[in-house]
Length: 189
Length: 429
Ligand code: SF4
Ligand code: SF4
Ligand code: SF4
Ligand code: SF4
Image (cartoon, each protein chain N blue to C red):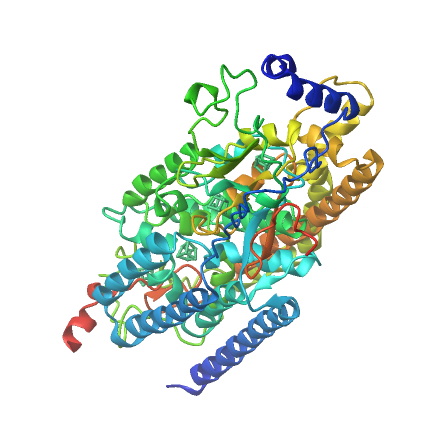
């Protein structure tokens, strides 16, 4: 190889090494900055039940066929009302478990008698689609013990939750995976 | 509707009507009915809290990524095996795509890293940092082997390359500007905490999750059909992470080469790359005077600040429009219209806002701040785009002499398709 070509090659090597050094430095710098705010554990999406207004978008905008958002019940807050406004249609024909009396479109709430005059309401998460109808009903006239949460056995933890984009109340946030639920009435603990 | 209930029971009527009278707005979490003291000793059921996927699996994903990158690099650079790469491609598609449902991916992680740099409230999981960094580090040393067979988005497109046609060079190189814009916007929106557009418009994730918005499904389907003829359209003309990868690749220490030995200028590989990533040897034009090229170079260098200034100006102009992407800015506009009586009805968002009891002025201040961030951000973004345009034009006008057929380090995704076209390769085997 003639001297001139060799020179050229070593010069090119030098330049490319320099550029690589710069790239490495840039990448290292970025990572260094990011490292100060890195956490070992994962984060997951969750709904802040105190912000949610039960608009119904949760049922339609999850990327999953049946939304990962479900209604959950904080039993300790519940009044065990006979006339549960989260369970019954606004104008029920009768206070029984007939489908035509129920607010829930999928019949996902199970009503069972405890003792006079109290009834217990449990959510069947297999059936719940997260439409929030019961949540609105419970909040309007009851104790607000029904609320929506992302269930993490279903959720695939999208990098950007598709519902968070359309949620009108800004209720979605990322929380630490070690404390993945925001249970109403127990947030302070 | 309240009267409907009243029909049923007098007592309930009384309670509800009283409640209604004393609680004009239904603030949430009001203990209207005291939880009962059960005489029968009934025990309250627990509210179940199904745990998310354990962190162990997240780190397993990172491990698989590292292994896949190592294998891809070995197959591309050392073994020079297209078949091997194809098998790995299918594995990556199955694992990162269909099994892990495409989240989190390196492409989207750009946004997480950006938001970490700009928003103090956000803390990024280590796994996401790993997904962001590993492919870049590998690319800096070995070229884009991540794109070759690891990235699930690249993988799904790669197996759809059936009958590639050649896109004219000028068109191809022209369209390759779009990813810069895309990256710029993605960074801007992530930095302001407004949106993750890379995730929102990821065309293939709907396939990976077997469900999603109809528009996105259609877009992804179209891209795949197009991809049968125009190889990897997302990679070439959209992928924002590809921009960063291409910078790294350009500076990479090692890189796949078409021929295992010396190029004999047989031209057989000329048309083999479906992604327009093979550069032909430069023709020796003895009669073009060197000074002409020099003159153009100097003009361009002088014009560079002008390009930047134009970009900044453009950014300043569009900044406030872009800010409307941010939900808080939109909400503030809505509240403003309502407060000033220009709109009578509340929508869901403004209703939710009113319920929080926050004063409008606070929201307005926040929106103003955001708008300012957007203006500054888009000016910086414009400046960068101007700078890149200038640099691109300068690099185009610098004549490099090339004697052989070579892979273009910026654009080559190290897929290994060209290997088998080289007769030198066959001789060696
Ligand atoms: S989209 Fe938001 S406000 Fe609507 S139901 Fe879901 S969490 Fe509640
Ligand atoms: S993160 Fe994804 S899967 Fe989970 S609730 Fe949101 S959209 Fe549904
Ligand atoms: S260019 Fe982007 S989408 Fe294509 S393989 Fe590379 S990282 Fe993946
Ligand atoms: S390895 Fe060859 S065929 Fe594949 S992208 Fe690079 S130049 Fe094109």
